Image 1 (cartoon, rainbow, N blue to C red):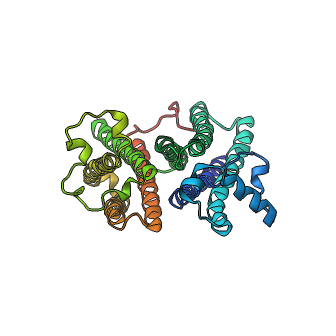
Image 2: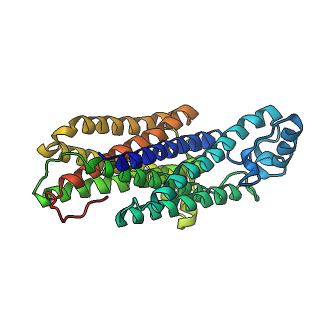
Length: 358
């Protein structure tokens, strides 16, 4: 592997770590209800936290002007405020750091002409999503500073799923470069390899849909509404679906019972399809080198589903909630890697004139 590829891998690997950390920090920020503690936006000055007692009092007084303090945290002390401020501050500073770790090397590589046409398309997509993610962060927080003490669960969901998509694209890019110099056994059975690629891709989409549904649950605290499984109260369905009263999409997607049911349903479908995908791939001799990966993926899927049930029954403890989010990222990583490997396996042996990802 040449030095240029090593530089790209180092750049992408660094940003994979940064985005992964950002999602974890964001999860802690959400689970500790810290996201509305910083009520102002300043790209430069916002990097400097309060440095003395007077500055802390000023920042705390600003927080007192907004709904979260007036409706939920009216008895909060300054010391308690400092704890939630810490996580939102780290979250925002980490986002700025990602800007540096991603864009400075990117500009250097771009000016040096180190990217192929296909790479440029992918990089532009990631860049657009990065700016969109930053906008959604502001737009989400803004929704909790008007008349409600919580952020919009719709905006929260878009914010989270965009982070997962950015992470997926970075890992896809990273792993394709990694595979560029890897010796691969090619499978000439195009139907079979296309089937594997389709299965892994659908599994990936189902997982992202499950994450999206989970974000809606988190944003409405719907995980606290029904804490038995598989029942929801006395039945399998939430009251809004069996009440017989007229309803619409808006009322459904604002109902805690329905959102929890949706997450349960999508998670179960994802579990079954992932197991189907692993079973099919594990039988293929061309995946012999990936048996351990599939076993680990199988273990993680079962663990993730079980953890979701445990979290529900324990009324969403913060640590387990964070582990659930990290588990989703780990499964996502394994699926992206599997998709890349299936795609590479299905290529015909490359000729001198064939186009590579790089």
